[in-house]
Length: 204
Image (cartoon, rainbow, N blue to C red; front, side, top):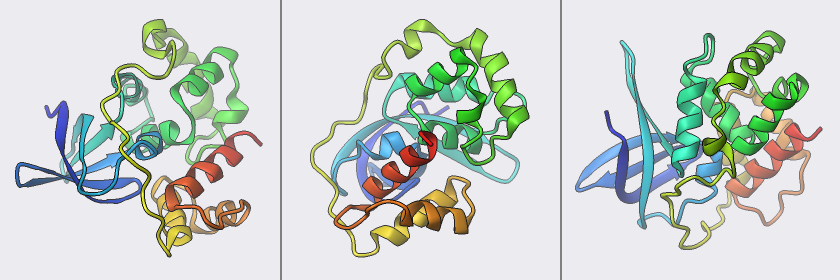
């Protein structure tokens, strides 16, 4: 099991990034909350990781904090919730917000996330309510591995990258485009656009 990586960010396009660890490049899928904390490319970072082994692939997921990784691991133990859905849930809201939805039985907010239908939301509320650990979610910080050393430079194709990232998280292309168009994206980088689009969706 690969539990942690320390290396240089070679490339990143949400939700994927490539980390060079002593000459070996690790492809990692990260939550958007982790992406928001990433430093500039070619800077050193440390991420907590979880390895998923399937018959056709080995997938590595990265997290800025142990608390977020613990929540991810709790989610994938629930019937019908795979790694991709868990990544989408933790990208669409913070672990504190997710815990609040679970404790309040707020299935309506959960169903705004792609791939989370009414039955899945109800299953999450029932099963996660018993699994939430006060120590894990008492302040979504936990132990943070990523150190912010500067904002990512803005890219000309920030809007296109934002749409692509939302599609990778499970949103349909048309819906992702609509979400991005609904916010004021002028002057924003792709990660800021994604954050605004996701926040606007959850707080409707």
